[in-house]
Image 1 (cartoon, rainbow, N blue to C red):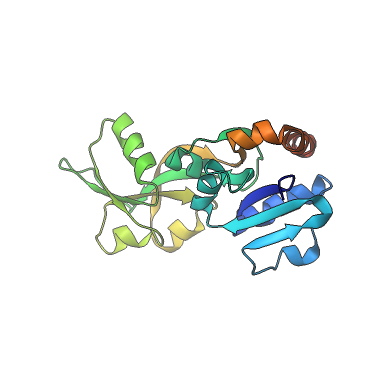
Image 2 (image 1 turned 45 degrees about the vertical axis):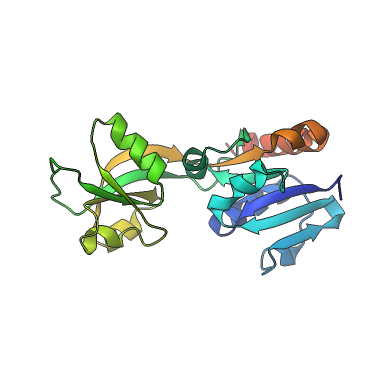
Length: 211
């Protein structure tokens, strides 16, 4: 198994777009790959193995070397600060991180509460703005926080803005644009540099051709 290239992939929308990108590069991924419920999928035709994980866990798998490469959103990379190489912007799953809240919100003087899946990123952002806030970490349905009085504002990913609008929230500030990146384990980059460089080159050609 040592020559097998192991790729950690996030489930969901990024997975679908990353698979499409790999197919455009000429990687022979079977049709059932898209609908598989398995957490580990072997693709012997390409001498590859895929680990399907929660987006936040992908950098952890790559850092610890159970995956050679991975696909992770820039939001996750900033939040997790893992010891991996970020080698290519895949330019898929474009979105951005934003601050949002109820219309007419006015900043409070004493420790306003902000809910987010990204406590480290949110803390750093408000620190840079010179604003002291209390961060409340949530794992899902962040939009609920202002509606039930848990927090005054939220920091979350925005793609179309539809979810915010449907819940009566408005964007207040844009923090950073987000795309998915190809990340690599430093040891794997030394041991499997030919395979990884080939993948980066094939992906780069397709990405540049799509622009």
